[in-house]
Image (cartoon, rainbow, N blue to C red; front, side, top):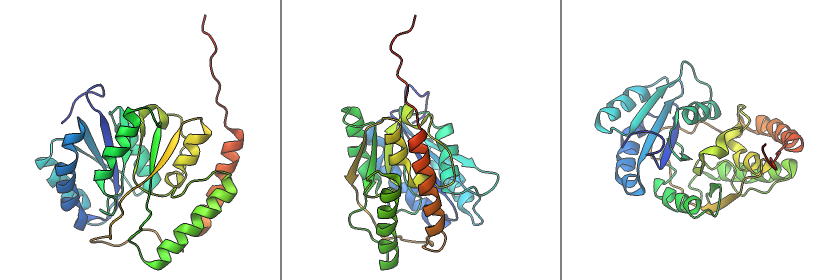
Length: 243
């Protein structure tokens, strides 16, 4: 299903880095789940993978006409890959999910419904029953609390990879390495309505996690203070009249 942005209900952006073992099964699941949700496209962003992720994506493109594949010139990280995907996306709604198959694309249906019914401008998932090891679960819980304390916002699961929002919500969002962990807070700072809902979370079937306590704790702390500053300096002017 392809066409102009007027014809596409949503674009699903998926950043991938060294996920060759998951690509085929991921695309097969999307082929089963997404068509009933309306006209769509999937924008898969290969973020400088060192394995055969790109090769697997190109093989999938031959079978799935709704798949678009972006190859980045070098690895820029999850936030940068998402930015590239959203820049290319054409749908009325923008959706995102991780490429490790831990997110369940079936949850997108209820997210899109909330947008359709104008009950939210952005919807973010909450992984109530995380299927990760104990260290990752505890570190994530602590990170969320620290983020809330520093930023002055309350987000249950800010780093959940499953989100959906109106196209216009994305435009004007500050871009920086790590923004994917702060999207609900950044959206709210600009006056958008953000709703969190419970989503399914699944064990990682293949491949290795890219994040751990060691490579995100200090960076996340620094980013939190940066987001606090951004919130304090954000302006949301509203035009009264145009003459």
